[in-house]
Amino acid sequence: MAFLQKTKTCSHISLSLGSVTINRAAYKTPNLALFHCHRLEDVSLNGSNLGDEGLEAIAIALGKCPELHLVSLAGCGLTDKSKDPIAKIIALHGVIKDESTWSSSLRGEAPPVASSPDLMINLSRNSLGDETAEAICDALHNDKWLLGLNLGSNLLSRLGTELFLDTLTKRNQTLAVLALANMKTPGSILHDRNRYLQQVATESREKRMALGGLLLEWGVDKDTVVEVCYLETLGKVAKGKGNTPETVLKKSTLASPKARADRVQPQSSVSNGSRASLSANNNSNDRSAEDDEGGDSSDEVAASTADSHVKTIEYLIEQLSSLEAEKRKMQEYVKRIEAENRQLRAELEAQPRTGAESGISPIEAQIIAQLETSISSLADQVEFMELEKNHKSSAS
Image (cartoon, rainbow, N blue to C red; front, side, top):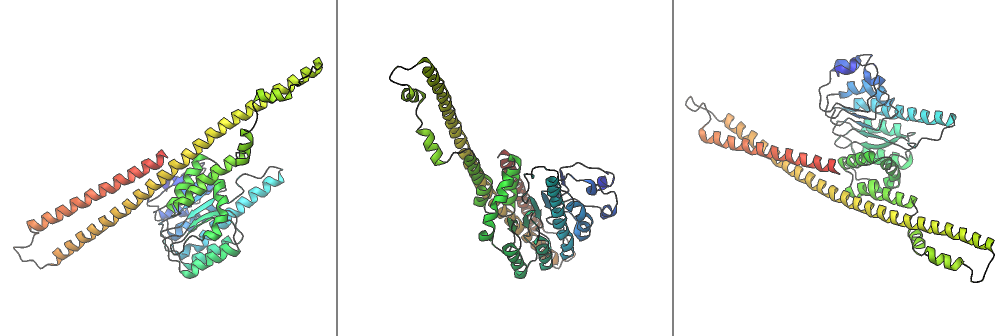
């Protein structure tokens, strides 16, 4: 993080320092650029050695970023000592967003579109326990900006899980995604909050794809992801265009311009002024009918395209799930082979050796070489599957 110490202003939209070794001395510098990055939207420190001390040093800076949408701190070595910094991030972000909305209303401006929760925090693969759960629940009491929270692979007990359930039921109405390792998704509580996820999904194609990928990564059911990010979104767009069954039926029964003209045109002779008036009405009706027919055609094309996109997304999600399952199986197999290899080495090293048997026999060396070749081949296969998965995700 040495480059952050040299920068006093920053306009980065995304900051990713995953799996890097962070210099602990950088936390204490007063000119840390993170304190000046007010336009940050995504911050990822996954797999870094951030630790409790590091999070405490940057918590205020993160909480004061009004445009922040994602904070990912998975596998950062966090413990319950980080409970206050985590709660501080949630509370400060809420204060900043509340002040922004309030000041906009004082200036007579329309409320911002993003007046619903939009912050996602990933705290998975750490050592957070019930103390952290209690601190987060206290912060959620008056919060309405946290949209999703991932606490998978931590140390929460049943007590911590019950704290979250009680908070979602009685005290917080906006948290829409809660990922906990020992709790199934409380659909009865969270399903009604899917509208907040749908609002994010409708902001842009990039946000929709990013949200869908993040929800899948957090273990949300793929059918729910499709419903939230695609099916419901397309349904809202269609409804906004008036493509209800009743409307389509009404449009399909409209008379043709010629038939409408025949019905309006009188059978007896009329004055010239009346003829001119009727002719003008007929022309107006003709244009309206043509507009309706054009709207029908464009709506049909849009509906067909939307249906095609949904089927494509469903297929890609199924393929992604299949690849992930194969990858997990392959990784388990590799781990098992590596464990057997380590056990074999330990057994060989533990065997007493005489002066003449100080080295490994040719047969043992051959077995070890074959095992190492198999492990290398399996690792290559896992890497290939990972590349193929990334390629499919980018193609979608």
